[in-house]
Image 1 (cartoon, rainbow, N blue to C red):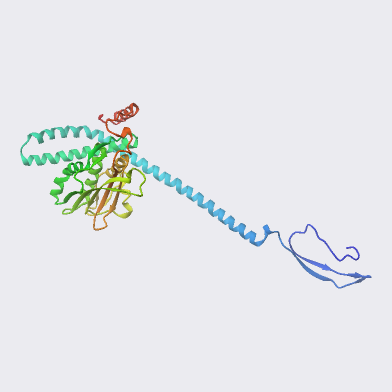
Image 2: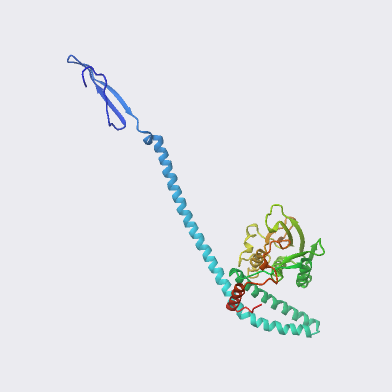
Length: 357
């Protein structure tokens, strides 16, 4: 240090704590040594609070990466589960269709002579037996046709043909199919409607399958001396912007075993079956309600199930739009179908050996 200078400078010194020892020299006389503690602060990006933030960010980054990897693994596993479930469903459907091909022709050959026996035989007791055989034969054919319909829907080859129909008379005629069963089991079976006649647009060939499946389920799970009520009404949903703003609604209510809340949506899944607590067994094939929902949606409607609030049992609600403004030209009966659609349908029918309609 130069004589007379009382300042000292240090450069390029790292941060940390230092000891500075100094002495003064005056005319060769040395003063006692004095010690100073000097603390040089680190830059802000190396301060303790910055390191704390870095640590938190690293922990969050590791957590985020781990979470992402786990979610990707779960997503892949879910995709694999779905793919596996779809493969199983496809295998089941293909198996049923293969069997259906073998059953359909002999069933037709059985039903045709039965129709002749029913028309020609006047014996009441024999008529009852023939009618029972005929109904069960028709039920088997309906199951086969349902499998074919599901296949057509999967392949995009199911085309609706809507026609203006009196829905009151349509439901009245359909309910006659279940009159014998209702009387035999002493089930109160009624149709409640305010309008004596209501014209709506439905696909006659497919809408009856919807109601038949729902009514069949209602009779399956309703005990003797119970009741099944079919009601019809119209309404307007102000919250709905689409075709269902103005609608007609069919509600089928029963006093059966009801549906567990967590299973209400699952009953519309393909091949899903509900355990019947009364018999400890499964009924049916698990395709009826799945087909019903698919056919209702093809007709621009919606179907839902719920448990009754005022007693035991469940309700199925089918809602379809009023009028025909929501329909495309090709969805209306007697409108000419595109040749490509006809060709695709014929190819599908030939592949599945379905007699052309």
